Length: 355
Image (cartoon, rainbow, N blue to C red; front, side, top):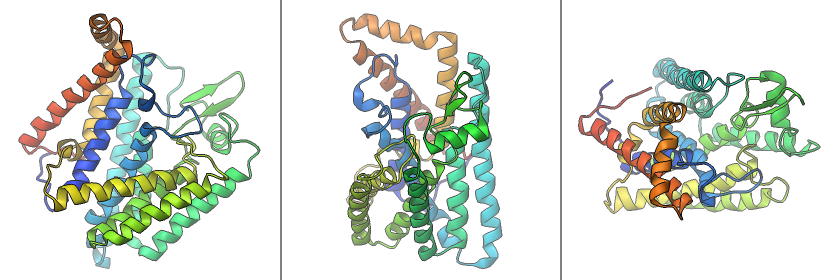
């Protein structure tokens, strides 16, 4: 599908694009046994730079809705059509994620098909927050954020343990979806999915924070955005006294901490790109974000299954025999560069693939 992205704010496209490029970088090392620590997620509790990438993407999705949906939702007559558009897009993203997992299940002969995933979580957040952006006002949206964080915190705090496999999110996902999870042990009957149902409460809150930040950005309220960053940072630090930072559980403290950092990055991008006129580096990834993520994910699955990815890493590692981790990073950088070329060609031809 070809279209011209008009009326867009360069900082939003750039930040979204840099986030997608970062996804490709951390998801595709040459060898998972040789990865620099900042490019790995925290094993369980904790926070690394990599743990900021997914919540930042969802935050930017919320910001985008403040520009694409909220201005058109003022007329009640337009709302049903807007909702249909949002839900149809969410359904397409969901189907794309399902097909991607079907490809992985077939190529690697996995014991079970995985229902949840990154694209599935994006679809859920787009659907829920999109409807809220169309039908609710700021006060209601803030109330939903508080309700999601407080309710989810209460569930987690009432649990006996937040450890892997036995925490409330894992238990619910296992009860509802086993064995179609990221990890499942038939021996113990325990499973876990980092993009499962219960932890999506936190992901929806992250997206809603982006929606409210986008509304203030659209209104030029830089002071309010700075205050949101400070309040979220303080709230996250306070919440850490009871609930640790944990991406796989998407804990309320993680929502607030990553939300604060996301607001700071949005402010910086806006000041540098929209106001100071610096180049919108990453914009080409940003205007074809989901297509680039989906296409690159499918490509790497085929390369791994065929053995080509291992051969590529071995070739680079042979040239750098004393630096296997650097070789692994160079493979990831090369993959990002390849897809930068793809989105550059698409943008040069004004082709924007909307899922």
